[in-house]
Image (cartoon, one colour):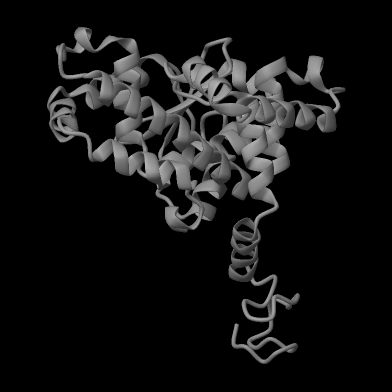
Length: 290
């Protein structure tokens, strides 16, 4: 699969603007020179549990099918003891995904698959380097010896792009599960674990997202206020993500991706889109070679 098949248009536009800012290439080179990737990899290896077929195999087993479906090499996979539900991906040459114990406890299997799929989307789209730079920025550039390099235009362009990139990777999560499952993960993150939120009315949650969308787009002043509310953050609000992913789930682009995946698995004909038997060499409906 290629990132261009599902990238959110606002992600693509924001990335073009970011890379066109004077001084940004210098920042990227400086980041590489600091050796932060190896530093973070070492900390992760020393502190967290690396998952494998021999280490918590039930949790590990969620990763390989996702990587196969998205067509990416399998990254290293870690579990971190942290009650806060979270997942993150780090590294550019040696990539790893880490999920927290709080996330594992909060999500069911489908929801965890959507979150891991989201993280794998960052790998497929080659978001990880710039994401790592943004995280460093939020943690304080001065502590990494970069005072003065993070100008305001770079800082806010980087964070703006990062928020838009999350919308792209929600789509990756939907490709490996469904838009409804991704919306459900947002519900858990907004309201708490399944023990608390299992009876939440999803239709009402979606309406809430729609109501926020009306507020967010109601005139220039409201747009400005909502922009100010998120401009220092690296993720969009949950309501925005729910609205975006459910809207995309109804799009022809999403349907085409699912059809292509099914055709690849031998479930439907790539031409007439009718069901075929995996043993057929030709579609008996239209004659297309399978």
